[in-house]
Length: 302
Image 1: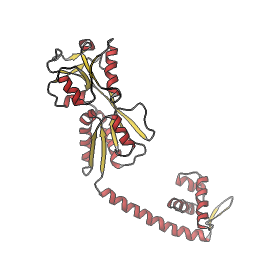
Image 2: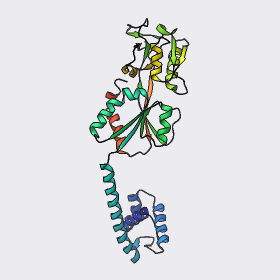
Image 3: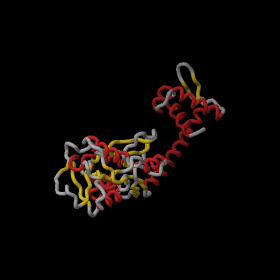
Image 4: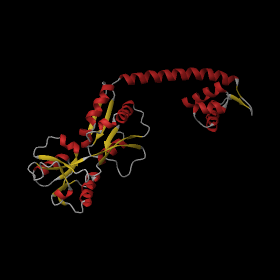
């Protein structure tokens, strides 16, 4: 006997009709009938008298119904008290984010969230997408902001947020500094610093596709994955790099950022939120609601 069987029996005992009781419980009448049969077998008593036209309680069934209601009332009261205690405690929201989202999206998003939940304890991990997704899947993170993977775990939900715009990072003394916008023809012969596709597939493909669309092949000077390493190599004059626009907010001496011509600007880097399907955590759902309500403002600088 379990609490769900008790709950089913109480609803049926009040309705005395399998169809109506099943609709209230949002289950099939056959499943409800099986629950009651198992309960009777477990108790070794007959709780109901069934006929083709009606259902009635036996003497034992009426007595059991009274006691079952009392047990359910105590059970629900205990659960409610426990939930209130949990709600009064300081909860932790564990967020993972790629570097550009950590700078371009999260500051404003968290500002709005904290205004609604000032008591929230928020932990943020900044990592690459391919490292954050397994942490989410294993339950070590509650919500992540990443580049969407090619294959998504069926237990996870993905919501597209926006495509982040990109700029060209060049050394501070580069010949193109001072131009309002640049085209692929302006830098197609320049050495380029590119991320490895294994770790940053979207960024890698974006650079390669931009050069391909311009009818040329990139001259790859160096592969680098970490944002600070990429910018340091650019500052040292070892090459240029296509980077998310949010990189402009970083303190990178010796680096200038140039806008790409609107006619040649690539589609951008997709940014998505991911979380566990069916997650009912109040913080996770509040964060997603805020993101949906204020999306236009939040992605304005991406």
